[in-house]
Length: 146
Image (cartoon, helix red, strand yellow):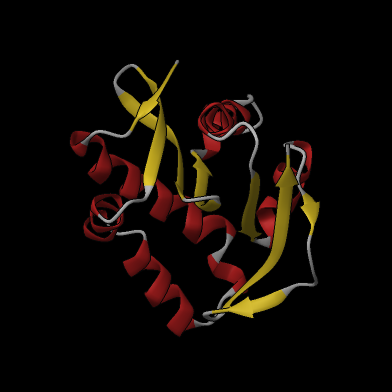
């Protein structure tokens, strides 16, 4: 497995697997309007637009296929997804470590779905507030202090 900066050729594949994971894990907690908005947010066009505007992304790749993705802007993680069949193998940790290499003395934030709270805790994040509804999606603010 290789962790690298996302390339233009990866974006469509990343968007596709994130949509699959979203439908299985997060969408059941969201209303229909939020599901539609989030599907747009994770479209290849929107990912590409965010990257052009300053977001950064790392992709985990096996056999030239993206299987994990972390996207961040400044010190906030916007997306962290790993394909279902590759979960619980340390891929999220490796993606996060790549981000930490760029920002070693930084406080990092994320808004975690219920599904991902334990993942963020295992990465060293702590809860920074109660669960809220953000754009129709239940999430909980989390913080990592290096």
